[in-house]
Image (tube, helix red, strand yellow):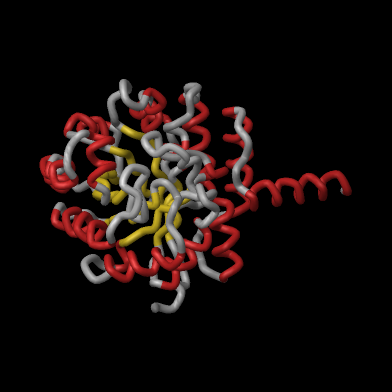
Length: 308
């Protein structure tokens, strides 16, 4: 077990993974303001948009407009989801710094989700990866259902390792190990990361945890113990997976930052500004803020203002 990292990279996924499942269309201007607020807070990487067919994800139909409207912070990476060559063309035109491709560690999930096997799904990304590399764009691979599947239940660690190796062969710069439906526990996190770090560099692996069963922070701590130093989080706990029933939210960024600050781990992100961004987007889309730390800090600030 490795010592805890002294610094971690937090990838903010709220604008894409967080908002993609909202039923009411979120105005483009709201998405742009959210990303700009997050950029100002200091995130080194923001997942900003998705270049998928509007037929499948209507919420992300304005990806080009969002990317054109944001105020990019120098040195920050703005990522977009790209499922195919058409998506890549959109991503390149939008000047994305990084594309995100995806594959499941569960055969059942792959078949139900995109109607093909894991191997076939990743093979489809070969021309996308080659073109992205030729254009000098970073590639991130996301391994969904790494800790469990809504259709087949348990997912063998060997299956996760296999997908990581397939993504590595595509030239991925970073690979996410994702708990798509939030069923993972600390013990399983140790087992999975211990295995995948044997086939891909530890410093280029990330943890993407959903909080469906309230285990996300415990799982992040377990991943820290394995030396993992990149984590995904979603402001105000926005999001979930449209294909995984019951997966009601990514871990809240404010909660992750509160944990990291308490551990003395450097993130470079201003928690207060993220709390404000979480309050902004929650009010803008009319949904309850799912961040416990965010709500507590907002209440504390309000109480202090009333006493002033």
